[in-house]
Image (cartoon, rainbow, N blue to C red; front, top):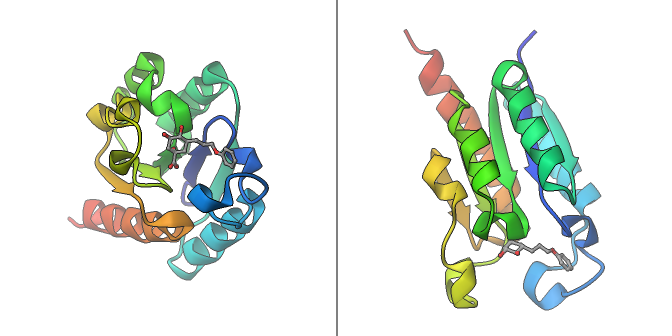
Length: 150
Ligand code: CA2
């Protein structure tokens, strides 16, 4: 059995679709999970889709991914800009890591312009709205296919 792609979501993303629609849109996290699962299935993969408001729980899931995931797609939310712990955890993952942001963080406040997580990411998807999630699944499938080649 192939390992799932972990899709990890950080603090407050459970509120998607309920607040700040002008920035984050009206799609809920449950809708996004379905979009990702469907896209993954079409590409021959599965996903394990999770959200936490706690930094330590996210670090634990990243450690679990070292053995248990084909790759990680992560929207670390506000921890992007603060968490050396998440960056350090991701640096121990040999599998591909895609960092994802719904909004274009570079068009927002200066404190959102720096990402610790980017230092440990294979690639970054920013500012494509919630479409970024299925696009990230597609990109991950391509990275995994390229890696599987002899
Ligand atoms: O654009 C993104 O995906 C962010 O990772 C979202 C984070 C923000 O801190 C990052 O700078 C960029 C915030 C997630 C909060 O999500 C909410 C969703 C709906 C209502 C309120 C917050």
